[in-house]
Image (cartoon, rainbow, N blue to C red; front, side, top):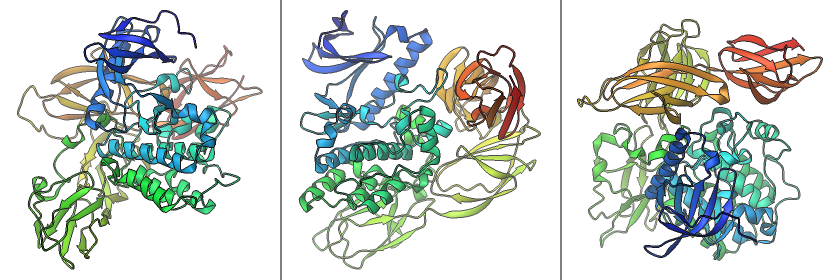
Length: 633
């Protein structure tokens, strides 16, 4: 294969050897660090993809985020990031060079069809362990797919591209803001633009379905068809059945991992693989043990909560998820007395007992003996018949009676489910809970899962009064919430610091994330942002939902301010006697005006027209959750 012309000699201090690949947004080169003679791969953004200084800073920020994620994870199943910088060629990322093949190349070439089932499952279990290691740190990949997995020369998978919004792979339309690859996206990513830990589990399930069956579970000739199937239809029925797997087991496992509701999926990638192995028939005991052993090694074996459904983009960006408040995480402020080692608690046995490891799902429970917490730093003897209690805020307590020889008990904690009444002053507010609009208005009874984090937004449909609140694990809404008038930024909490220079937080409460400019500086797509005390001008936009607005906020030290975003509507456009491409506020969509496909827009005034039809412009006040516009061309 001839080398492309104009290969740079250096990028930063790194000496370029050859080009490894190129895409719409950038190139990847094989390079060498002259200081330590280490080979590495350099990813550099093409200059023609950088339209402004803001774009350059955004790419640098994304690369820096990926480097920070790599530093947090430090796992052999994840590609390591060595350096981030800027150069005359553009922002670059220096990473581990992995000799081998990308998994998507193996799939597309047909090589995967000739691979033994055992080898496929070893790849699957390796990726599962890497993803669960990331999830144990509350880091969401957001773009799990074969193209982001490298297979080394000895057959081991390496997961890559954490935290990078791959725009070259993510164009729904010329104006879309969907980041990810449509065929592997979860329903919540498509509908809400939010990726969670369980979104990665769904995407991983899609990838495994394709590796084992040779086809995608939601195939389609167009992106719109694929997205519709992911959101609305069950996975494809594979005929003939996959060799080596029970057909009924296959259907059961993939219906679960590809469930539309995140809480109905497997709680972790490893849990999915274990369930999948139960459906495998062509696997001897040694191979099965080897694959399960791969899952058990490292932090990838942590069992994750089955109730995680919130957006973790901010945790992905920093890896500092442990800083999220102390209340509701461990009971009574006794976190320091328990040694948590990924899987759970190591209880060390003395000469009269045995070493016991208790794993809880979710992890983080406190082990109590005779009403007192165990000090995991000291030896502990667990004898046959000895009882301990497991406690975790937001979950029901569990009594465990030890049985001799059971050194690795796995205990599932059930979240506390309570019925609460959401109340506001004035009443009659619309409620958005965890990015999902609820039926009815306040006062409103809901089933409250105490075992998960919650975001709650109230908006009065006529008065415009609003409020946003956030609840930690174990917290329950009990008071009447006073809404603030429309146009006023709602304060959701008191200052938590006496430092007058401490930054405050602006949280954007609504069903979608927004692109934010602060005092003219582009901060990217966010759901919340930290700002220094003082007055700031915010420019808000969401091209995906045709939203644009500006607000001024006054930030107090240590306080959280909430900016309420408008609700979303499904707008259906029908024209006759012919149809054409729908344009909203002068921007073309990928939707035809045949009345078959809705376009999601923010509520408010919009100009609707048909591309190429100069006399088709209509001003519309969109104020319903679902609205139809019909007119003649």
